[in-house]
Length: 252
Image (spheres, rainbow, N blue to C red):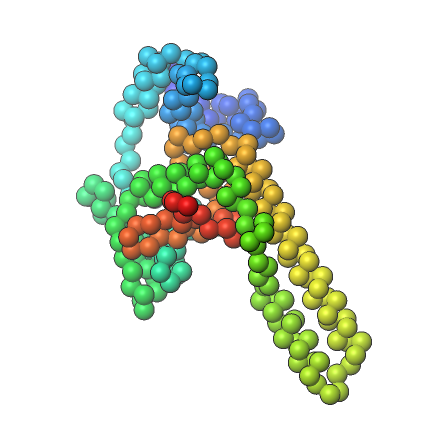
C-alpha cells in the first residue's frame, strides 16, 4: 500500500534473510503476491484475523492496478508449465501459441504430427487448474504416494537390458557361471536402488505437501518441486505426473 513493488519487497526480505520456510530466504514476486491475495489473513473459521478487511482489499486493489502484462505472455513463472506440458493422447510435447493482440487467445498443439491434437486454453486457466489439483494433494498428501499396496515396480531400461543379458547368458551353453552370478547380483542391487530411490522421492514429496498450506494462487516453486509432467487432452482435462510417477487429475 505504501508504494513498494513486489520485487522490491522480495529483494528486501531476501537481503534481511527473513525465512519463508525454515532455512529458506529466496523471496520472489510470486511469494509476496500469494501472501497479499491470501484471504485467510482477514480471518476464517480456523484462522484468527491478522489484518482488517480494508487493508486487505486496499493492498489487492493496489496490486491489481499495476498489472500491465498481456494474457499469454511467457514469463519465469509460467515457463515451467509450458516446458512440462505434454499431449494427453500420445504423450508428445505440446507447443504453446498466443495471439498477444487478442485477449485470451491461446492455443496448444501436439508436436507429434501423426497425433495432431490441438485445443484452446490460456496459461492462466492451466495455472488455476494445476493449483486446484495441487490443493487436492495438499488436503490429502496420501494421494501422492503410489508406492503403497498398489505400487508395481517398473524396471528402468538399464535393468531390462541386464535382465535380457542374464537370460541370454543362461541359455548359452558356454556361459561363464561366475560371470552370470555376478551379473545377477548387480541386477538385483540395481533393482533395490531404484525401488529405494522411488520410496525416498515419495516420502519427500508427501512431507513437502504436508507442510504446505492451501494455495490461493499458482505456486511455481511448489509446481517445480512436485510435478514432472502436465498431461492435457483435447477436452482440456489436466493430469499431473508427480516426481514419483503418481498421476493425479482434477477428479478422483
